[in-house]
Length: 389
Image (cartoon, rainbow, N blue to C red):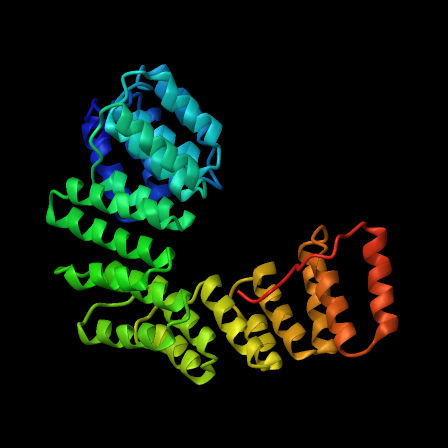
């Protein structure tokens, strides 16, 4: 039926629908069919395609779509440009992202937001703040998208003085109710990461329309800083307010249980996540549960959970269990986990350090010397390699 439409309009609508339904591969298949039908992409097509590429970067080479944008003279289109910057940033190719950004001297706010957001999400907080300062120098007025990225970067840095300055910018950028919620959430998250839960709560208290992110930001902040009772109390309030928690909320709740050493409560919330809310546990949820059980000395139970996970455990999961082995001096389990870690990360020498500590704690000095000899041969500096999550 689409063959009847020589233009890109209908094709774009279908691709956009697939993107909204979180089906990026289907959107890309439609684009391939569009190309095979001889329909040229327009300034709306490329941004949709780039948004899809960002979600399947492990399976798709984004460079070819950059070439398509150039071929069709769309590289400097503001929406295509910001899409390319986002794509390269999410792929970790910050040099290419910056190159796209810098080649157009007539930049729009969307491109600034893309480069700032890319740096912030990619763990380059200082670069994100630097670009924000440059944006202000160039006379641009930041919007809600800008401020959400910048406050996130500020939270990563834990710079409270900067946080106060950005809070003022947030008030200036508020326009719509939606942006009000977004920026309130970002402020709660920022103050939480800066360790000022009193200020995070003040923002929360003044936020009239609270969504799942509002509650989650506050709960996670309390959990991160060890305010166990507050985190769990607000989770209860969240449920009473009939706001449905998501998988990130439960990471915060389970983390609070870890800080409080609350094993039974942690199991209760883990089951609630699955049975009450139908949320399928991800690697992070299992990691927090293994950490909880490991810290409590329930090493066999933690091992059983790892082995029954529906996905293959990574080094972070086994590392959490290794931390429990070190804490409780379990030689046998420590040796078992060490072998797993060696298989996963043969280049990571941290396992030898922890194993040596376990042997030393048990008074097995011959084993300590054996491990130290291995470390010496591998030229290992004695640095902590694994700890609890």
